[in-house]
Length: 124
Image (cartoon, rainbow, N blue to C red; front, side, top):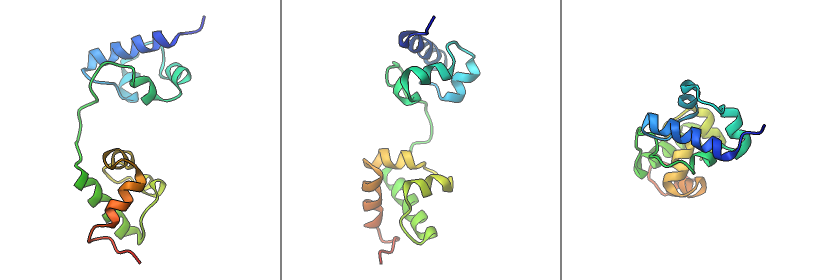
């Protein structure tokens, strides 16, 4: 018998209700709820896609401002000697994450454009 998408969402909602926020992958696995993380991914393709259907707040955490994101991208550009690609930035392990920067500023391309307009990034 195949586990339905609805069953997956019920499990995710149960986890969210228990935690008080949408679960991270690690939190969901630690709760040992069925169906498994792998089954949910098989039904939705991505964890974030499944979480889009859960009625709960995002996990509380560090909130980065637009300015924080620009400064982080400018610092990375200064260190690397060029504007980093999203892949380069992700590999550097910096905070805020590349995904946070892209979300906060609209896209990675827009983030790089805004960071490039700052004083601390040289543009040759």
